[in-house]
Image 1 (spheres, one colour):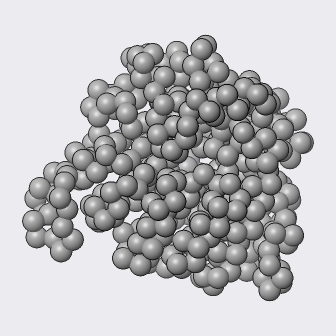
Image 2 (image 1 turned 90 degrees about the vertical axis):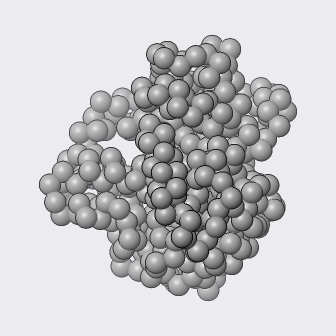
Length: 390
């Protein structure tokens, strides 16, 4: 609770310091296991996978300098947390500082590993399965307050569907997380992905899209900045919102939500300020071209969004008031982005409650009610359970 408001962080993070894939991989994959290389000079953990560094920029001097500049003001806050390996108990302590009752725990680096296009599909899903098992163990430190989010990749949608089912039924995961960029040219509105969307819809969990600044895929929006001046700023500024915009367009205009009307979809950690313009643009272009398209829609792209989708706002997003004025406050959730150094910890929730131009009623919905609807939870029961273990 914060100032009397219940709070759910729609995508709290874990930093996978020291994560060793070996104990979690099946025997036949262990010879190929990603190798943990420790902390890079960026203060981030890194791995090598099939000879490739993940993140790709882990030891790039220009990124090191930019990251060290970002980290310096918060070293007193994060130094001791880093020494603890960003463990679950430090996350629970941080949630108490912020006033967060429930955190949905998302990966930071594990999805970068499976963003490599050329991974064998069964190996890619095996890596997802290994992380999902590890994340379940992490959240079991306090499963009433920490809820794991299962990662999958689109290397093979049928294998991904099977892994989502396993992760939810056997390991307690509460959503499926997909990277918003293509894998080997396969995008999210490709017909072969329907098996995955069908499974997620049947399980009653949400599909969530969450980008990364360390994608290794060939078709990645910020790759054009690699090797050019000020890469890290341009990479981090563009990758998250632009990849989400394109994935949202594919889901809405590509007919996925027409085919799966009960599928709930979250577009997380890419800001929300661009949303009114993007929905207007998609509607406008559908009016102009849609009558000649092969895949038919029975509603406007913005109608599908309002019916089935949610978008994440940062706690300090000043243009949130404009989004609410344009589309309302029913489809917005929140994240503090803990424990990333560009986030506002430990003052994220307090800062959000002080955000001008947004009513307390809208803030209540964004902090709790909308997150409950996105994840399909029983809010009253969750609060009671969380209070019992806080």
